[in-house]
Image 1 (cartoon, helix red, strand yellow):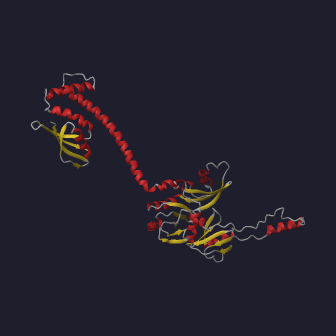
Image 2 (cartoon, helix red, strand yellow):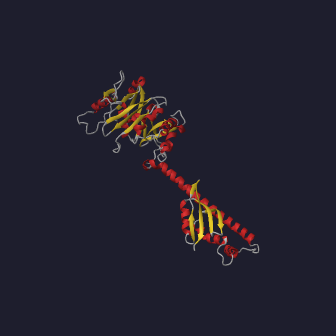
Image 3 (tube, one colour):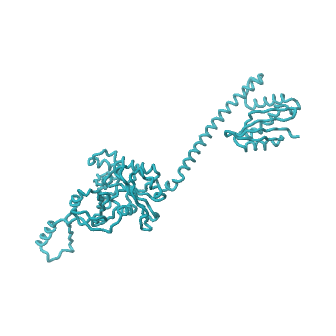
Length: 434
């Protein structure tokens, strides 16, 4: 049993959704039942949320809903055994193997012991647990959770049926009406394997023949059945009563100790490390989505900026030709810039620093350092020697950065800032330093 498990919840599933489910919480450390009960049907799993908590949850599949059998493995099938197994059983089964979940329980030489169950039932049970946030650690046949005996079978009655465990990986679920016939069919003759050391020199050939003959004609002995619930009346077999226990307690203890798990293939459990990060799964998914969105947004912004740059170049050339039609060719952007600066200087007036074009020319480097600030309106008052800007930005810090840059050359008076629909807006008044 797992040392780290202090308590666990075991739920015995039902063959049909409307049938009751038995459950039990067992504590190996305290060696006692913490809680137990029965649900009316699988839709009431919500009532076990408080008992599940951080406890492992084991699901027991009724043996009546599955088949435990053996199949001979053909030569050369070992490497792809899991893929081949369903088709080795195809002739023995009445159903399409594609609709069945085949779980290899054990392999000995050329014989494989398997558990077979319908995919539909597996999906129904697992969906019911998933909808309610349960995470099954194990799903295993209930009969294989009974105690194991080397010299006989173990048996217990539950809900009017007998669970019988024959070996480590074989067992059945028997109705009382045909239990006697099944037990009788399990009889086997006594086999005495005599060795050379057991033979005595005085034994004659006739004595040896007589001894062998008596062994072959000896009546078969009955199978020993170790029962944990009251022995049924009129049933064959050598029944040996064991200390009575709650059947669910017996099954829960066996489930914790068993290494069998039907959760394989499409139903395989997540890796242990995934379980530890499960509480952070939603956060990780959200962070991944944000990262993908940011990368996508960055790529889109680069593409938009490139498109804008091309648009700006085209627009600047259009304005240049409109303002300075005498220049027909624009060999480079620096040529355009130099000609525009020359025109701007001439428009500002000789020796004058009061023209609005001069102001705009001087403001350009400052706004280049804070490109996130966009001017939506401006008003120039020549008499008062001030320029009033109405601008927007994505954050308050952008205005503070702009103010810091402008303070080097201007007296800056910043009005009240407000934020609406994700944009910060405000007014800035500039006056030249004396």
